[in-house]
Length: 89
Image (cartoon, rainbow, N blue to C red; front, side, top):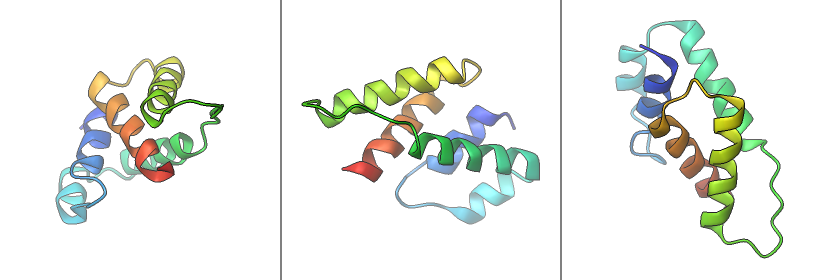
C-alpha cells in the first residue's frame, strides 16, 4: 500500500479510527511510521491565524502539504487538512 492510501485509510472516519482495519491493511512498519510522521508534521504546520476562517486555515495547510509532499494524492492532502482543522477547532 502506498503512503497516500495509508493516510486515507488511517484518517477514514476521523476522529474515530478503525485501528484493526488499518493494521490489517498496512502491515509495513515503514509505511506506518511514515503515516505517523505525516500526522505529526501536519499538526506542527505553522499558520498565521489573523482574521482567517477555519476553512481558510485548512486551505493554507493543504497548500503547504502539497508544497512539501507533491507525491501525496489530493485525497490524502484533503484528509490531512481536515485532520488539522479538526484538531484546532
